[in-house]
Image 1 (spheres, helix red, strand yellow):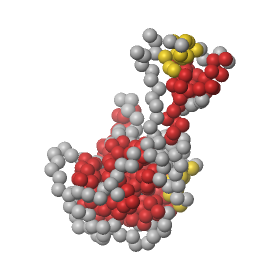
Image 2 (cartoon, rainbow, N blue to C red):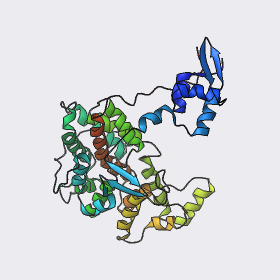
Image 3 (cartoon, one colour):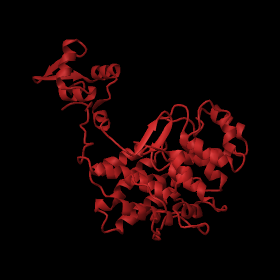
Image 4 (cartoon, rainbow, N blue to C red):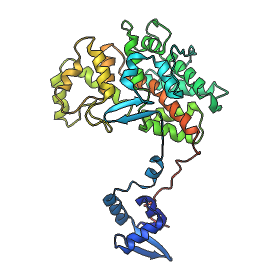
Length: 372
């Protein structure tokens, strides 16, 4: 039998009440077929109506109800609890911005604990982000109080410190801030902790990005903070999310010797130029603009020669790639910075989600296969 939908399934797909589905039938927008005394609807017909009406279906009905006081994306600007993010990155420390996102309380001089050295046996092919994921799992296993959700902030501070400590040490940290500690593990160049601090703040949160949605879904099941972070890291691994910074880094490394030739090669092969445009921003990525402005103070940038060839705007992935390339960081350094910074946002969203009704993201699928 051709795939059919029940009345309730059709209603969920169309984002309406079952009574409205029957109203569509009376208006001849849908055709009802009786199967075993039950009204059934053709999948293709329901889908066509959904496309015409702009219906977003059952999942949208849940996700549209996510209310957050953490980040605001508006008119190509980004704010944390009402404060401009580029402004925060120029005036505040990462630790204090983390506390602001978690509590809404301003602070000065907040310190994260010393990280615990986590021994891990990984193959030579392991990337920095592989180490981050493993460090989170091992830190979780070593914390008998991980299921105490009221300790989320304490857990988050210790976890970030542990994750940074898990990365290979390249030099002596210039200070005790997370930016100092992370620089010593990513770059052999003379420390520029202010740049690292700015990058971490710019990436700490970004509204309901796909990794944050994954983290909130885990939190809705009252998963402990380590599990919430692991869920976010899983989505972060996607080619269109955190991994995009590594792709952009490899492109820029190639472009550093021949920018025009590298762009031309990509265009000839039909490959898009990495690091341009954004699904949310329309004309500019304020995070990229700010970080690139700081990097231009260091001298001429390879990325500017590439930007000149494009009609679109650079995004944060490209800015991270230029940051890493400028200071001799590994190709996956951008991903590592992104992941460590975003732990702050995931924990902030988890704390919000812990206060919501549990398992609220459990939606019913709209089955479109063969019916028994």
